[in-house]
Length: 180
Image 1 (cartoon, rainbow, N blue to C red):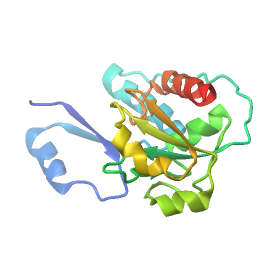
Image 2 (cartoon, rainbow, N blue to C red):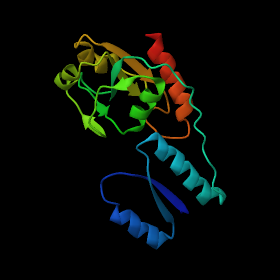
Image 3 (cartoon, rainbow, N blue to C red):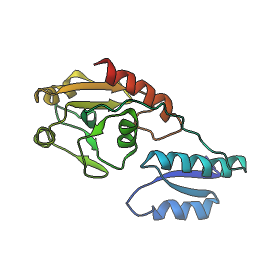
Image 4 (tube, rainbow, N blue to C red):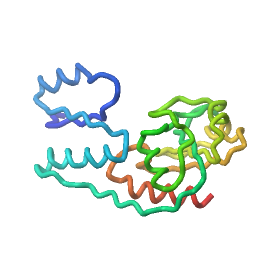
């Protein structure tokens, strides 16, 4: 492909040594950007614009001010075979998003967590939000629905990608949560 730049979402795991070696051998720039929170999306946008446009641009995430709802939510990715997916804890971009919408995250541990149905029951959320960028299979919701807690499936092409599309995704998520 002969890239000039390769963009990597920075994680807690060490940087890939082979990728760094390839970068040196093939003469392309590696950019590692943290994308855990809404503020990280704004920062990455500024840095990327400087790299590609040679001028730093600012992404203005113009969120509407919403009412505060006394409703706690567990945010999950779509699981498989009636098992739960990954849970978005505090200090993640979807945690930021639901707080901007006016809800609270029942999962107070930070980061992304594997969570069992028993763990969800102990958190006592009022809603379980299942997010996906592809259609959600009814089979993957079966176990979650057995808890007797309202399940809100939400499909959006940008929900799992922390990007500049976060405002449109947030507005669609707000409509979906309030429709229930």
